[in-house]
Length: 325
Image 1 (cartoon, one colour):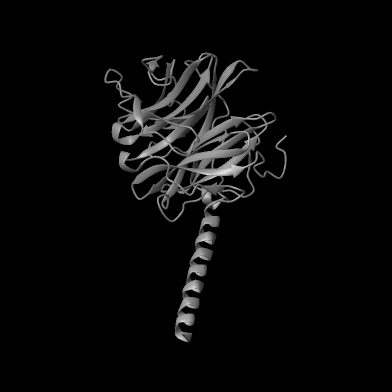
Image 2 (image 1 turned 45 degrees about the horizontal axis):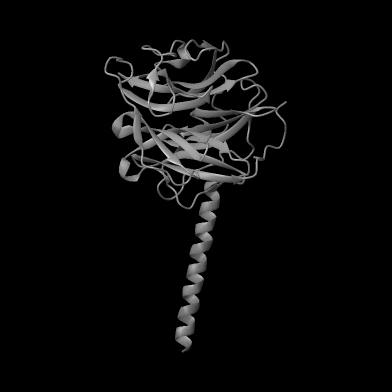
């Protein structure tokens, strides 16, 4: 009997230690109030690599446009709660007549005047460009230009522009775009451009407006693939920081005008790779505040496979300690 009691005690202690270290490891994967969803990944698996997404909150739920690597296309999934998603369906596929977009990915979708506007990345021959399409329902898309609406031109942009993050600023009456540029495999920094029609863009003369900070080891190599959200008094930027070209984590910064004086979150990186499906790197954040909590979707990589997961944050306050103004 004594041996049984001793064995049971050892088992309980072992379970407690496992739970303790599991909780500790999970806590180290996120900071500043962010928590990874227990049901991750929420999209991917048998569909192959799904990566770099954009999400809209709509009546009855959410719409997600993803980069579907096996199909070289932009795919659409929908969800009632942002956690359980329908299977992806390709809605924008390569156009054989446009040689610059033989592979499509990295979309950004904005809904304005009952019309969906998509800026997306077209790739061919080791280079990237940004294209533009519109849709009445988010499913059937019409390209608005046979040629790219944004191309690499400046020395810092090298061969590629990609990963557009676009908002419509009603007060200024313009579209604002933050885009990544530089190397094709992973771009190097973030630039800014504006447009009145979504087709003709004027790049900021101070580009790039957001670069890596070599003193921060986690983003010492490059920063890229951001999402920018305009708030009442500032702009939030969720972005990828690269320690090296293969190891990426997610950070947060804010600026009073979306161009200058970016202040990084004091606890960056806010999301780190885990021990399972996202063990190799975490990429391309996209966040929405639903009135009670933040949902931030990201693609996690384990070896060569990427899938979509989500992290949650209660309340609007994201933990900045000082105003950027």
